[in-house]
Image: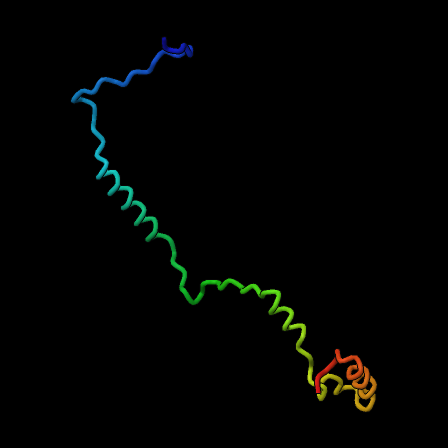
Length: 99
């Protein structure tokens, strides 16, 4: 026994020669032509002007950047003779400039 849902069953309309048939090939051709026209209207970006994605540095690369130490000839060059104090401290600690 069919379940009653309160809605009458929907029947397909009778097919007659007066019912227009849908030409799927023509519909596809029309849709692809519309897409091509829309794409042609869109401005194209020049490859040289395209934004490059910034490269993400890995943790190892960041650690390498931190480990680079300045040259001792240039690290405290603005201090004159007073540069001896920080140079000695850096040498003792082995965390300052490199010789």
